[in-house]
Image 1 (tube, helix red, strand yellow):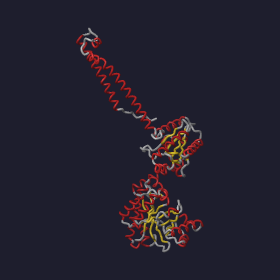
Image 2 (cartoon, one colour):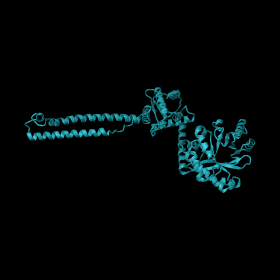
Image 3 (cartoon, rainbow, N blue to C red):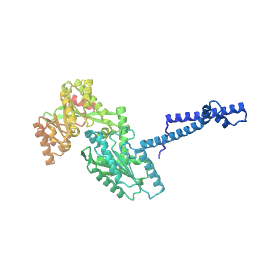
Image 4 (tube, one colour):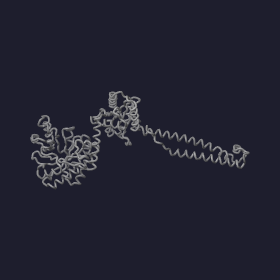
Length: 537
């Protein structure tokens, strides 16, 4: 166990020292007084007779001098005992505060790590001893806090803690492991269980299933019925762990994978997950360095009108180079940027750079001053702050707002419809167009199409590339184009790579297309060549 820090009790400590000094002084005074008496009267009279003699003047004074050291010694002893008691009580309180979660009274991360270390040491001594860590993360707990309040969230955590304690054996450990720097512990929705002396992995899986089932049961909190689930990550001691932090880290990695698989499930950590976690960390580090060194650049893919086959605009596509100079595929680094929040500064730079370069094209090629630039906006970016970010980009670059198109996915709207509606309204006030990207691959809620003033739908490339060979894909494309036109929206087809695809899109009256049939994404130099010559060098 961790050593308990030394506790200082300044008030009682000072009082104890003063009492000790007073006792010493009293004994010194008594000694001097006795010495003085023996010097004046010799040794013919005893000291005790002198103090108790009724013939002496000031008997009370003499008696006080005699008794004071004894009385003060007793008082000093009582003060010392009181100080020790307060110190012990304070140490016990500090132990409770530093080793136990204040809300649920469960062991916290620090004590839990000590318990894991003890189990690791035992496993090293006893080769047949095996234990497991179950890391539980409540699914969508933030929604409970946001909708019902933190008070209800705290009651929910206490109820779940009680349920978990009832499900484990007396010698197992359940802990609440909110992040150590989360002072108020708001949103601390993580628990961990150490299963001691397990026989095999099936025992651990059985416990994980039982815990998930017990958490699923409805919970009555503040006269409300709440339902919640948990994702569980599992690590087993037989993989040769030496540090408790490593074991807990791997269990956390397994929880992350369980979340990716749809939540309300368990995942057992293995080498594959370790490799994925290592790759993720390396990619995150590369991404952070790229932000610091500005190792990003944009390519631009032309958007072509189906009828006239003329350039109508460009889509700005983000690219990133790692420290070794190699390109990182967008499908790899963009999800990491979303997860880490780096998409916010990256997205701010993309907006500014795309607007700046589009204005340069307008000035260099006046005949193309009607061209618009399309910029992708992620779910993480699409908040009320995005409007100010766009205004700043337009003000700094001088690009006209009607030459900027924002591309969003369906998940942006579905995540928070209220905020999305407010952002849409402000964007319309700025005369900025909004396109729905990858339409047909997400939620595809038709109810949202008439609630939000979209200007265009972009048909996902998977439908476009299959439409000539797949009847269902063709019907989907037809339906999207017809519906969009009926709702006064334009349609852009993505991923057009063959002539027969373009011919079918023209028959269906699709407005625009983009894809390798006309041009791959271009750097600034090739983009200028295209605008100057009408062809790619």
